[in-house]
Image 1 (cartoon, protein in one colour):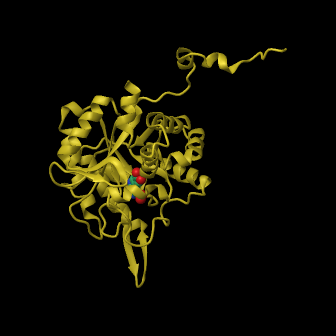
Image 2 (cartoon, rainbow, N blue to C red):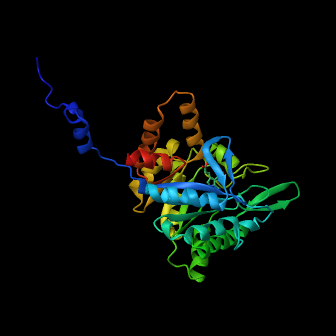
Image 3 (tube, rainbow, N blue to C red):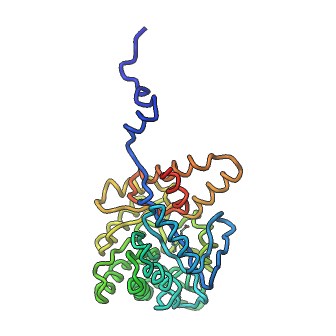
Length: 330
Ligand code: PBG
């Protein structure tokens, strides 16, 4: 009988051997944790479609921030649920808005110095209609007015930078917003604040649970006139290229798990830091399977994140950040 010359199993025989030849590693520092900040005190309101995720008042958010810092998590992504909403989403760029106050509170706490504060720049949590931009109406028709929205997004980004945000992350998908935000940040003296643009953000059913968490479901229509068609990988590359030309420092791919081809294509093509967002639906889907006992919780969480990192994401936004960091440290 002939022996196989190459035996792949030789390097899989023991844990030490497997560790030696492991090609990809997750670190707590590459994980970023999204928080939904709401008004009030001692508020910890559960989100029915996202187990263990809450709407948090600022004092409660600070507790989460401390836990994240201790776990060595890279940073926080802040979303706001304002006291009231209006057509123009004014709560989004108010100097004393909910996110602005949260950023100040986190930045005032020296123990949290190592934690990056990233602010989501969008209008959908602040507008009464739930769209990511200003609505222009003509009789029975309406559209999301791209150019009228740019100025408000830029104002929002500046208000976050003023409050102390380390990175601003526009997620609205209006054309030209990176340029508009960069210009306004620079004019206002925030030349050193980087922009992480959600460059390839697809109109996705996987955002379902987020809309409960951020109370941001559109009241009419949907987001397909500004977010990308799931069928279009080439268009995603154009979106990225444009955002980089406009001055984006880093790019974000979203969703992640069902879009690994997009992450890989971006990785092969662009020499910039790439983030990916394991979105609410990806999280809830896995949690549902864990609840049913159909998937093994810890292994599946780490495998889902490893796959995203392996396909080219340098960092990952995930609702599993705390748990994954704990697993990685143990
Ligand atoms: C805001 C925004 C959304 C998400 C992040 N920023 C919702 C949307 O575009 O509908 C989704 C995040 C998630 O599903 O976890 N525009």
